[in-house]
Image (cartoon, rainbow, N blue to C red; front, top):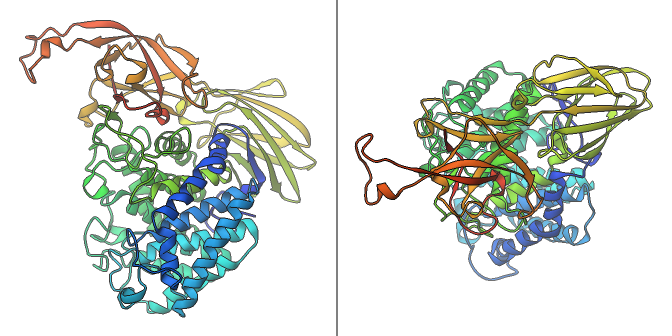
Length: 621
């Protein structure tokens, strides 16, 4: 069985996931999974080939002449692709993908055989072989090893084939042998190995991998990664007071630390995780769930430094936000972490890939003049395969279990077969979520025993929902974001859940000064934006929407997937009196507004019909 994170034996896990194979998607996210199989994975493989990433392995074993091509961490993109492709095989067999994975594994095995000690990194071959492990701060050796280990675990869990997994064990054991002592001067310049080694510990039961990760975390702040904020080496982990430095590095580090807590129960780690989560959600996260405001250093900014037009908000950082909040949910069981995961996934992650699965955003601004455009590939191509591995594994996030509970974490048309005690519980979800507020669940089982089924009530409902069991209305108060349905479920039971998706006009903390007197439109989990292509008669940055919220809903036939769009009557400010003026005294310029019809689309769907201005935060009247 394939788990993204197998916490089934983790002593501090309050919630445990369901294997990917046990949940078959059929709705909104399934469309993306189908795109992965039909389009994205094939195109990504072609770019791995044409960019020289795969050739680097051929060069490393001597079957091809030439020097290493591209960034020194390019091996990691291949490993992420293998992980994503492996997950895709869990719900749909594909001989071409299988053949490509096997061909890559053969190359990786050959590189390892040539190294003789278990080491795998194509950059450090030939004349550079003597430079191995000399610059852990910058050269991403441990980062690449982490992605290789995750790929090997995924492929083993999906197929049962241990060829790549055996490579990974040798890679991990070589790292332990290279850095054997408790006081060894080692930590990761780019965290990633932490969560990979923990998962290897879960897969093998070898505590040496867990203890090594503990060392990596304990060694932060000692100068082993440069001693600077960018590398999260400016302070010891337990002394961190706020999110700082490179956003992806920080989020991957926090994910690894949460994994350590799940295995050890180290409360000093939990205190840091909780403190920094508050910092994230109250001071340093975009309304889209995006993270990282600065281009310089791809970094977190200061508190409330969340500019819209120059937001960096890297796609990989949004994915890191998903990873971290998933672990926080598993260790705490509180749906507030799923709320953040959902916000990040449906907005900032999905904005990172085009609706046709062919193009990507590296950076996800919340406002644009019409210059920002998706790319088919990047020289630094971390985002495309990262998106792919999250989308192909999303089935594993839908449900969770405890000793006496089945938890419905997310809503998606799907069919699940959930092992529980000595039997199974089938849950079929029928819904058009995230565009529809109606969710119908048919629960079937032969088990003749009591159990609790918990349904998540997202924070955006503001506590309002309608619940019926076999047509009988229920009144139950949510606890920690869930309603608990208790009873004996033998036979078939129909549960109807309505999660009201009223249009919310979201405002920002007054200290986030750029958004003063502006609103962002949210419906359900989705943030909306105004795009110029839908509003050609005015500049969307001048749009003012009515506070009375006289909005209309309709399905778009101009965007793939037919998302729900929001339209209404607003005002667009006339800029004629500001011609050749940047500033003027209050009241001197009479900016007249004209009545307009406006249309808003989900933020994840922007820049799919060519370039035009876009704006999330809107004026309000």
